[in-house]
Image (tube, rainbow, N blue to C red):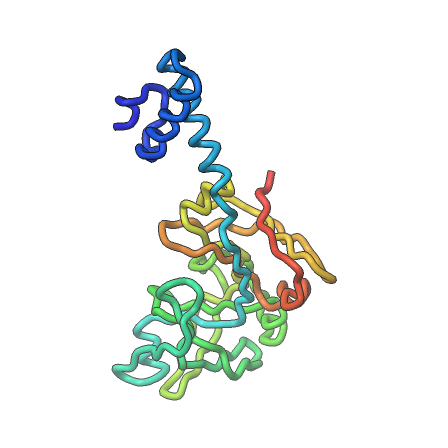
Length: 246
């Protein structure tokens, strides 16, 4: 371990870099105590690493109305033995927009005729809409984190092979930011924390209380809905920034 060779230097730092810096310090000031050399080397290396670490690339995506389905509901809506057909890969690895779409029927028989299905399938079907979509359907949408659908309104899904009545699962997805653990460390947050998104431009806004969803593999991406994106004129924004909430 590095600490056994160079007392005072934290474990996990690059050995070659430490040795190179120590040699340079020794040559500059012969006779200094080993502890002083080690401490100066650690400061130099850590400072260099901090300067070299650049801010992660941030992508802000407008999440249009869409539907997540179970395997069973895919077959009931599109036919026995059917599976989702990938149409376009999404920014996050392993996720895609499917070729399949469904019709949504609200409680007053108001309809959204073409809503995209996203894959892969899930354990529970879920419909994510914007506030204005809820008005069109006559549904008072609760704001929920994806997957938190207990006690939410339902609707009817209609596909070419049949229909499915959802007892619950219609939500307005709470705005959130996906990131990996390295990104979380950079911003000083953890899974479940809250951040703000600053969108600069002619309609600039600050959207507070983005839910942080951190895991080992996600790319840094914010999801907002169409109402939020249109209000901020995201397409013409001059910049976007993530801010840690205090």
